[in-house]
Length: 468
Image 1 (cartoon, rainbow, N blue to C red):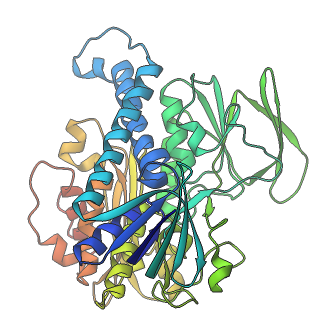
Image 2: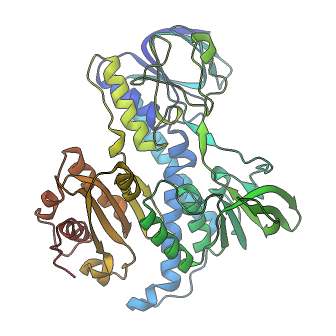
Image 3: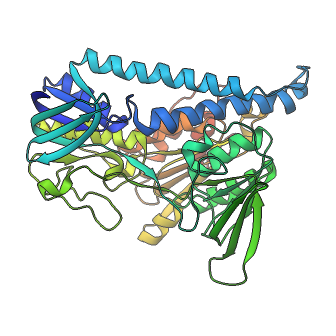
């Protein structure tokens, strides 16, 4: 039995939890972090954002070597996939990142407990250590940062072999000849892209009549066309009612979302990617009178739960279920605990789909602005007209600005194209300062760069685009 007293105990070591710990350490709070996985970093570093980006990058290079190198004068033998080495490289990168997080804990004098943390009453956390030990922690503040888990699909049992969730899809032992992705959200399309590039025939089944809900409709429509050209097959407005595994693969039963005749669809592997749900099981929330809502989210008011001294951040509370949103929650929550003025503007949390081309956006969609009744203008510029994108043979996509027609304040920016995930930050900064499209349009950008497309789209709001 180990006992200790802290100013803050954080349950969960993902991007929300470990960034909360870092900020608490910086502000001089005696801090502990509890993580049951045995390594820090949460879903994002271990089985989410980072390993998926490793495979996206590797698969992009594999596809480029097989199809694009020769067009620019690089003649190489047909590339041969070494999936074992690709997975090893992915894991080596993940291990380096998680060790880096452990270093940050030591640097900021945060005590790390490897085990499952459970609230045992006001100011009390019991840690069932992975080594069999038990630690009783007392604290002034508890921060719940336990993240989320894949949402299960009724009638479809995940075995992580033939039917996988996002975790299993990151570690397949062989490239399936056919892959069905259930769910046309960001996770499904990213992982579907990985396996399509490596040789799988990919079919996406989506309950809604469109892909990527929440994305600007014009952008989503263009994105779907691009993915279709790459080889994706989409079955929209369709639901999966059951799945049967066998020696020859998986047989899915489908039917129209609006009702109708059933059909069968077979695949070697099925990826269930219909979303994520908050992880709050076994945390002892009842011991402090905290009750999640019907969807599993913990109700909060500026990160405060119904229980004094108990806070919640990241995927367990409302808002975008994104690692960088959890980081913002973390900083704001700890600053409030320390008596500072923590705040997060959820209208300025960007989203990125790391396919090729990438899709990125921040602020309101055109549909949302239209529904609000605000008069608006748009500016749009295609990468086909951007000199750097054209030289690099990366001309798919565009940048779109939406601005208030009276004030020119930027309300939303939507991009599809090469490396737009790196460029959306410019729009975030502009909007954070309440900037106008003209502010960006009159800011010099280096030439030749893809970022010039952002400036040209901003110019387009007032109809003075100069490069087309």
